[in-house]
Length: 86
Ligand SMILES: [Zn+2]
Image 1 (cartoon, rainbow, N blue to C red):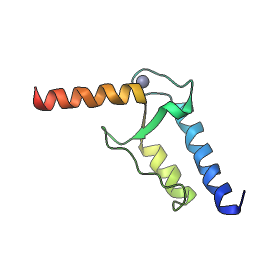
Image 2: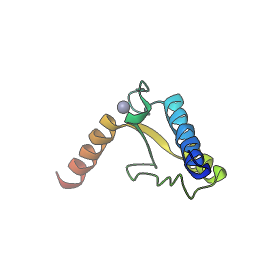
Image 3: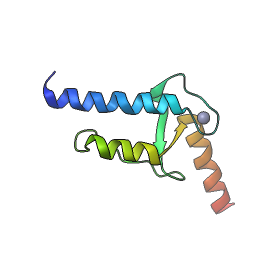
Image 4: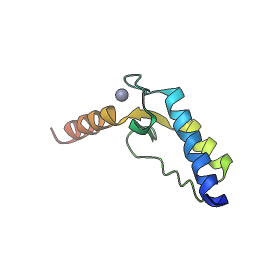
């Protein structure tokens, strides 16, 4: 693994550990980090580019973000659409 790939992996590991420590903001799920995502206040995903972002930017984005599981993300999306169009 070259230096760049290793740095990307370290940042990915950090974000997964961060997400798992936080757990889903709705249901508390944290068993598997791949099912957890970062969202901003509501539903737009935080763009974390592990390649270009420095550590400071990653930590700042992670600390501002909200962590939810994919299940709850879909439920929230559905609720939002229902509220908008029902
Ligand atoms: Zn959840």
